[in-house]
Amino acid sequence: MITIESTAEGFSLAVDGRKVLAHSRRQGCVELGVAENLVKGGKGRWKLRSRRVIEAPLRAFKVVESSGELVVIDFDGKLTMAVRQEPSRVRLSFSRFDSSINHFRLRLAAEADERVFGCGERSGRLDAKGRRVELWVRDGAGGDESSTPYPIPAFVSTDDSWCVADCSAYASFDFRRNATVFDSWAVPRELVLGRRETAAQAVSDMGSFLGPQPPPPDWAFEGAWIELRGGTEAARDRVDAAQAAGIALAAVWSRDWSGGASAAMRDLSYDRGSYEGLPAEIAALRARGVRFLGSASPLLDPSGPLYAEASAAGYCVKDAAFLDLTNPEAAEWLKGLMARGMLDLGMSGWLAEGGGSLPADSALASGESGAAAHNRWPLLWARACREAIDEPGVGRVRDPMLLVDSGWLGSARYANAFWPGERAAAPPRREGPTASVPAALSLGLSGGGAWHYEVADRPSRPLSCPELLARQAETAAFSPLLRIGEGRGGDRKSWPWGDPEGLEFLARISRVYSGLKPYHVAVAAQQAVGLPPIRHPWMHYEADPRARRLAYQYLYGRDLMVAPAASAKSSLTELYLPEDDWVHLWSSRSFRGGAVAVESPIGYPAVFYRASSPFASLFDALRRTTRRG
Image (cartoon, rainbow, N blue to C red; front, side, top):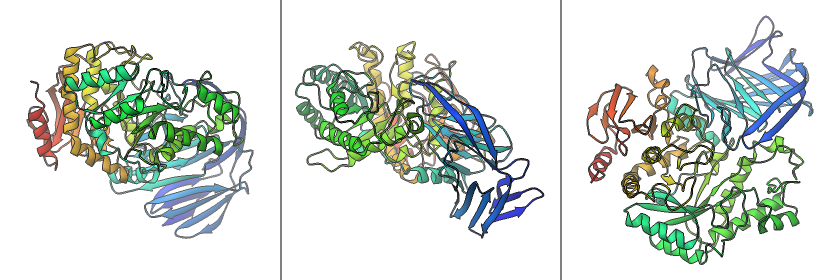
């Protein structure tokens, strides 16, 4: 029930006895303004600021309507706010504002002792309480916590509540004061607040509201995915070498299938020079139980045939080699090309890259500026790809898959999984897979869905040794996908291909991953109810105050606790187990909980399973069948 009570200078609004808004003449709960908003930069290094701000404080108010399920408040005749209660959630919507308004602020009541998680894929400190979090899609390696290709204006609190702001403009959540302050460069369509009885229910409720995310098809869990480069012959040699080494293969994927391996797309048909006979090769791989995926991007290579055709038809963003996804004709043209050029070729999906690259100074068919549409662009790109994949076609493979490297509010509805792309999610003083755990946890606590590593040595942040790549791979085995990239060199000697021990290692790790297939499938199925595969331990152990503070270990599904090695050379891993009956995966030793330290040589990361898990026999069999020979 919504109740609104008068105070000395304003009102206090509560839902089911919990304060949501407090308004007074001294500090209003909502503010408007007009400013000159400036956006400069790109490639992850953006500068956003406002100047000549003219604030329009809203002090006077009038309660237009008040009932148990709906309250409507008019502020100074400039803004109308409707607060509507639904089962387990409340919607705040806004209307009657001047179209020139481009600054908005809303103060929500907050608990002083809460911890706050979410706001998308964020590196660094997991708890956002006491911080201001910017929400702007930043492709590339930005170098700080705000540099993320997948921000989401959504968070969950340890009081089992959640909040989503439906706004695509540049925005921020400020958790530094007693109130939670939402600022944006546009009036949001609505804010939705939810509250449930448990942490897991709250995260599930928010995830379902924002998605749900389609789970990966079962074939994705058959083994590792390896990158192919260099043409048909090189691809065939790579697959032969992998299978000869005993690597369990589910799929191969290629960035240069249409010519070139840069972020810009040259064409949407296969390169008949390097990849001669690719359709037949894809069919041959399929007969060997190996799927083939390509890649695509809305960023076009100005020297390629795709740009020439798109530019001649008026499908590009003005003065940029970028497809205009706000142009319905351009979007339909692109979807048709992707369906014919990839799915009709026999591909089982693709990697959708470059969604966060829209220039801020673009002029779009919708009439919006690039800055206004920038955050929404990854969503438009993911939606176009999903619609192309879902387009019915004769003879196409069943259960195709879509991966994306950037996103915004709602992207989880379209993509089966997300990966952080070229951007290094690690804080500067950390290395290896443990550094990316906060980013994965943060995305899962934002309704973002499935997150996975791309195990590769990146040009933007090269790893120092093959052992770190091995550490990445062993951790990825306990995540939604085990996907291996070529690395910065992209040659035949890059890890693990030039190293017999590396091939032997990957063969064993791929068998660990594929041996978990029944568990992978069960975990993925829970994406349909909004539960992320990689979960913060707090979600299932919220009564444990120490579980709230964990940031470098995670639950994969409900039953596996994973603590990645802190460094390549670490032979011992320290972690915390919430009170429960746990079994160390590799030794079968039993633990009740608390701080523990276990041996973790390369290939044997610190992994524990719940003794009461319905998959306990699977985990025990995995230990016996994947021992080092």
